[in-house]
Length: 219
Image 1 (cartoon, one colour):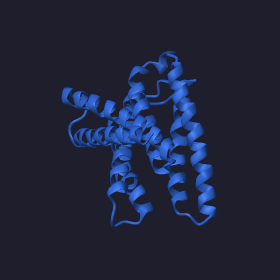
Image 2 (image 1 turned 120 degrees about the horizontal axis):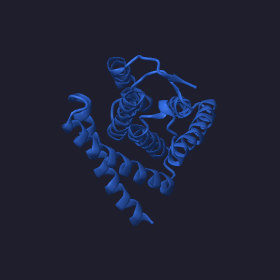
Image 3 (image 1 turned 90 degrees about the vertical axis):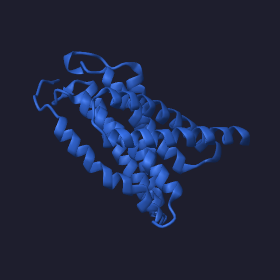
Image 4 (image 1 turned 45 degrees about the vertical axis):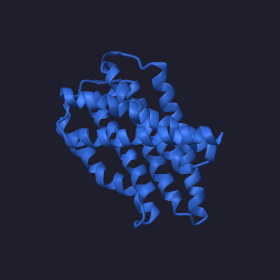
């Protein structure tokens, strides 16, 4: 079993490095062109592989840190990519079973994060704050996805905005993992939350920049 863990660790680290590099390239360069899409393919697969390996490792070694990052980054990456295939939800397109499976699973994990986070805070463990933040963000994402699946859409290019938001969110998860693992100066809770605090404004900026604000459909 330990050999399996070591193999997964190597895969996890390599995929994480690729995700961090390709994510940085796409965050800092022009969006939507051919190089962006090509780099995005590497980012997507590296993040999915990284998340799956991390999830299995978190189970094998009962590592809550790995579990949070793995679940959060997988959901962000998977839904960020899936939304590109759901461009016609405003015209009656139905989400597929995998879309509902992703969202319901995220809700279950989010509830666990929030409940366990409250428990840790009640026992004077600051890491509970991290769980509460990630759990709350996850609940809000899942709630938004359910609304969109049901046709509650106000922005014409909703799929583009969600793609941007989720992929940056996945990049934040990769950067958070890198910072937490290599942090030697900051308090742990700051290392966990710093990438989210710094990069979240970019999500709002690009969402506003690329939004087409025509109200086209609402069920």
